[in-house]
Length: 136
Image (cartoon, rainbow, N blue to C red; front, side, top):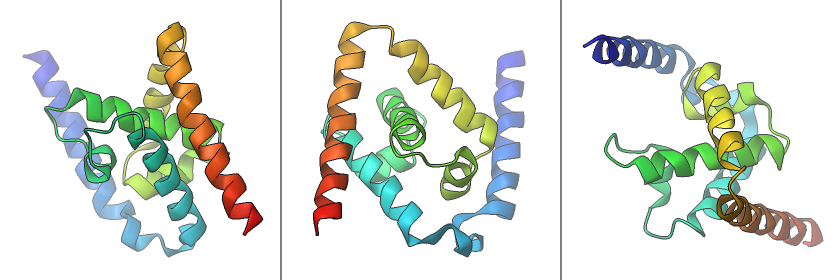
């Protein structure tokens, strides 16, 4: 029961945050941030092929793999694309603490060799895509 109460309180805070800091009310984030976030989502989808981009962006409650995919995308945005956590929080309509928890989750998982190898493939996907854009 206490866990359900915490989840309800968290959900309420997240709804309030989205209402005040939604993407549409943040025009200063710019097209470049949106494109970089999309690139991270596509890189993650290259390994989570059964998930749609929309499921990665906004994971349904029951899809734990979609939640992990979003956390990986956030980690890639921060650590490989040098995006600010605050900008990512605004793009996703989430609190900065949610972004921090996602980073911690992925950092913990990177200790596993198989996960680390998969993560590197996603990072290479981003690197090659960004190099391709730079050459154009």
